[in-house]
Image (cartoon, rainbow, N blue to C red; front, side, top):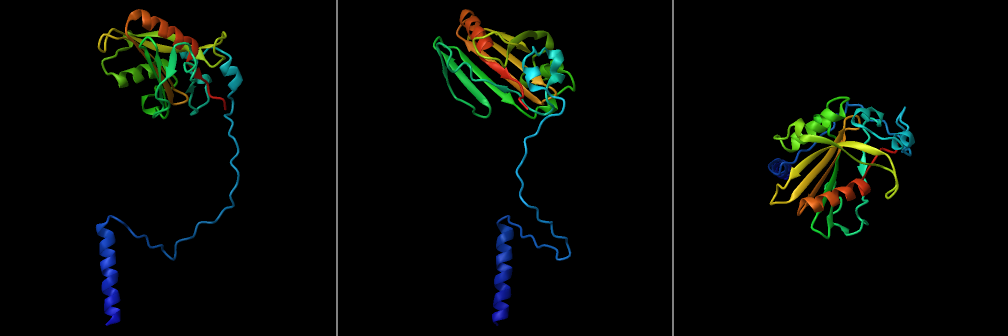
Length: 222
C-alpha cells in the first residue's frame, strides 16, 4: 500500500513540474564526465598588429578604418559634462548619454556594439550610410555630408580628428533645428551616433561647435 502511495505521489509531482513548464534532466550514466580544470587568472589580450598610440595620434578619415583593432569597440567621452552652460542629463542609459544647454539645446550621444548586420566589409562610408538608412529609411547617401569630431586627445587642446557623416535636419521636429553625426567603424563592428537639437539655427551652430570641441570619439586602447 505504501509503495502504491509513493508511486502515485511521484506521478503527481512529475505532472506538476510539466504543467509549470519545468524540465528535469537525467544524466546518462554512460556519458563521459567533463574533466575539471583549475581556475586560472585571465591575461590581458593584445590585438596583433594594432598600435593604439599610433592610431590615436593620427586623423582617422573614413578611408582609414582598417587601422582599428578588429572587433574592439570605440567609445565616446563625456567632455560636454563640464563645458560652460552644459549640464549632464540621463547618463549611460542603454549606451546613451544626454547633455542639456542653458539655451534649450539637447545633445544625445550613444555607442552601439555588434553592428555587424549593417557592416559593409572594409568600407566605413558605406557602413555609415547603411546605419543612417537603418535609423530612417528615407535617408539617401546624397543627404549626408562629411564632418569631423575629436579623435581622442585632450579637451581644449589641438588634436587629431575622426571623419563622420552628418545629416542636417533643418527645423524639423516641432520647429527645432537639428543635426546628426555618425560613423560605423566596420572593422570594430561598433558605431557612434550624436544628435543635436536646438531651438533655432544660431543656437545649433554654437552647440555644434561645442560638440566638435568637447565630445571626443575614443579609439580602442588595446
